Length: 362
Image (cartoon, rainbow, N blue to C red):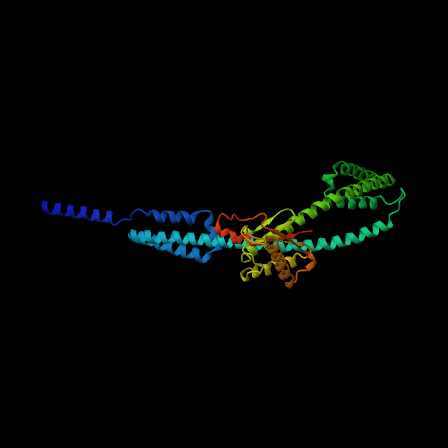
C-alpha cells in the first residue's frame, strides 16, 4: 500500500513538470520589437499611405504571435524578423508617397503663382497706359491734381532705383524720399497745392538721380556683358584646341595652333585644318571681332620672317574660304621671336612652327 502511494506521488510530480514545461515560453525579442513598432505614432500614417505593405506586416505579426503561442520559438522569431523588414518597406513607401504629395502640392502652388504673375503682367500693362494718360493731363500749376503728381514722382523713383541710384546717388535720393513723404502727408491733410509742389520737387530730384546714375549703371552692365561674352569665347576656344593652347586677357582670346607646318614650310598640315575650320566658325559666330594672326617659326628655321608671313597668309586665306570677312583680319610676321615652347627639348621645336590667332572683342 505504501509503495502504491509513492508511485502515485511520483506520477503527480512528473505530470506537474510536464505541465510547467509545456506552458507559454518568453516572447521573442524580435516579436516584442515588432509590436512596439506597430504601436508607434508613425504606424497609423504608414498604414494610411502604404496599406498593402502594412497589411503584409500585420499578417507576419499574426503568424509570429501564433507560432509563439504554439511554442515554436524559432518560427516566431523568423516571422517577427520578416515583419520588421516589411514594416521598414511600408515606412519607405509611406515616405515616398509623402514626398510625391509634397511635390504635387508644390507644383500646384507654382501653377497658381504663374497665374498670379500673368495677372500682374496684365495689371502692369494697364498701369503703363494709365501713366501715359497721366503725363498728358498734368498741368504745371499749383492746382494740378496732387495725386497724379505723386504718382509721377513714384514712377521716377522706380526708374532711379532701377539704375541703382538709391546707392550711387544716396544723398539726392534721400532728399527726394523726404519730399515725396512730405507730399503724401500734405495730400492726406487735403493740402493739394502744397502736396503737388512737394511731389513735383520729389519727381525732379528722382529724375536727377536717374540721369546721374544711369551712365555708370550702363557702363557696369556693358562691362558685365562683355566679361560674360569673353568667358564664353574663351570656353568655346578651349573646346577647339584644348585648354593648354588658349590664353586670354580682358578683351581678347589667343588660340595657339601649334605644330601646324613642316619646318621652313608654309603649307597648313592637313591634321590642323579641322581645328582651323572650327576657329573660322568661332570667328563667324563672334562676327564683330578683329582677327589678328601672328606667324612664328622655330629658332632653327631659315628665312624666319618670310616663312612666318607666308604662314600668316595661308591661315588668313583659309579662314576667308570658310566665310570670315577679309577686312576683319590683320597679319603679323613674328619669325623666331618669343618661342612659346622650350626648344631645348627636341620634341618642342615643331610646336613653335605655329600661328597664334587672336580674336579681339570690340
